[in-house]
Image 1: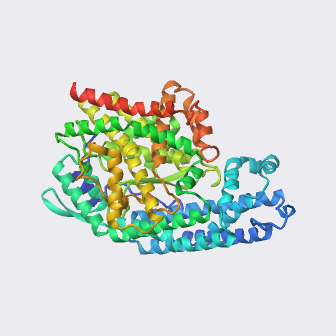
Image 2: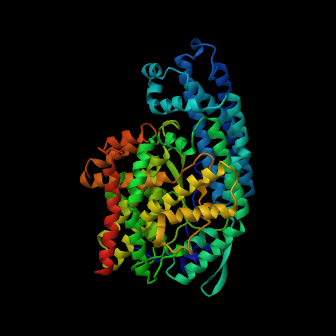
Amino acid sequence: MRGQTLTETAVIAVETNELPRWDLSALFPGLESLEFVEGFNRLLSGIDHLINLFDEVGITATPASRSEIAPLADFEQVLNALNDVSQQLESMGSYLFGCISTDSRDELAQARFSQFQDRAVALDKLQTRFTAWVGILPIEELVKRSTLAAEHDFPLRQLHAAARHLMSEEAEALAAELSPSSGVAWAKLHDNLTSQISAKVELEGREQTLPMSAIRNLAMNQDRDLRHRAWQAELGAWEAHALPIAAALNGVKGQVLTLGARRNWADPLDESLFWSAIDRDILDVMVEEARAAFPHFRRYLRLKARLLGTPELAWYDLFAPVGDAGRAWTWPEATAFIEDQFGAYSDRLRGLARRAFADNWIDAGPRPGKVGGAYCMWLLGDESRILANYSPGYDGVTTLAHELGHAYHNLNEAGLTPLQRRTPMILAETASTFCETLVKEAALVDAEPAERIYILEQSAQGACQVVVDILSRFEFEQALFAGRRERELSIGELNRLMLAAQEATYGDALAKDERHPYMWAVKGHYFSPDLSYYNYPYLFGLLFGLGLYATYQKEPGTFPDRYDALLASTGRASAAELAARFDIDLHDRSFWRSSLAVIRDDIDRLEELAFN
């Protein structure tokens, strides 16, 4: 069963901190603890040791002759040491980011994170030197002679190709040294500023000041007047803070374009596709088929408007509940349901969920100073941590299942080195999409007709976001980069580009004068200097995940083990190679059409239930 969304009960839960907070003490008891100081110093010593090792071995992109290339033993020593320090760095970064993303006003955490970023520059420079060095190594010979190299075959070959896109060693070192005060600083400004934005909205008969995460959750309320007020309050808050956010966006994209050109990338999308390990043809086929499916999504949006009793759907109606949710989902009910449904798939997946709930891996509720949205991060070993802004409705349950899917992906990569588990963005959504689908299909089994309408609409709503809204973000980012090549873009220009992208995707299924021109300010993915085009990977992840789920339905007995092996290999093979293990051809339009047909069938079922 599914429930209401953010109501007075949920607001009270936020205010009284009833929802669980995560426990990061598996790494350190606290920022002021001796263990943290020792861990930080150990990381610094490891970086210093690595610098000395690189210098001793002579790791450079331009040796005087091939005879100066390091012996096999030196190569293996360097790779092992780099993996070891990188693992320490990832854990430390997760710990510190976990502290500031749940409380951006924590001055000590911000100070430590700043220190960490400054020190991490040294490792960034070493990784660039390593990439350049790998670029002149005889990879074929190396893989044949070294078991360690063979275990890192795919990532080493990718680095070998990436070396062609490096600037000089001095230029790369300068870029790394400037990063904390340039692109990373702009991203940090966006995170910190947006996590502290609040707005006033009339709620339960009185004006209340709520954090932006709670304001955005009101978009899922049943009361249309409240949704409208929250939307107006949200737009007003973004408008009031748009100037520094626009500066941050211009700064990040300017840096990406400048460095990309210096590194001989024709376009930021080309660089994104390279690291995603797919070719442009795969992207084009997928996007073209998704656009061809727009009429079905617009049919869904018009259907939703009819179900809500409004002649035209507004932006603040996109997440409105439809049908009979039955009741609100308390946190214990949501976690028990997920655990049961994961268990129906496999004991291993159930065990992962049980550990996450029992061992406080999850920071669940929205509160002032906490960033919005949801994410999962690897912490150490086979442990992850999940940030959520839980609302007690179907979307809250599926978001939780989605992030637990990421944790399950991390579980399957436990024991691998950082280089081996460098999962490309397009495959990072594989397990999360699969887990969401498990929960949806399980919820439909015993649901009454009104509740089935609710579940199917929520599923169609989520798919619409991943297909239609994601492609609006893709369209926007393409236009943003094109404009930023010429000059900085004003707030008004950014708004117009966003509205144009929404028009190209939502079309006449969404009221023209009630859209969201400030979505460029909302989505943190635009502000990362290292994650351009973090939009189409969600589309790939949804459609690839649906294709894999279809395989599971046909072959439930053998699927889990094969699937775990795929998740453990996402950093060690291309997407096309992994798909081929399940007889999927990513260049074949019929695959993408079949996955989109699953969504279309849900829309058909929704329409039939609602009006027959």
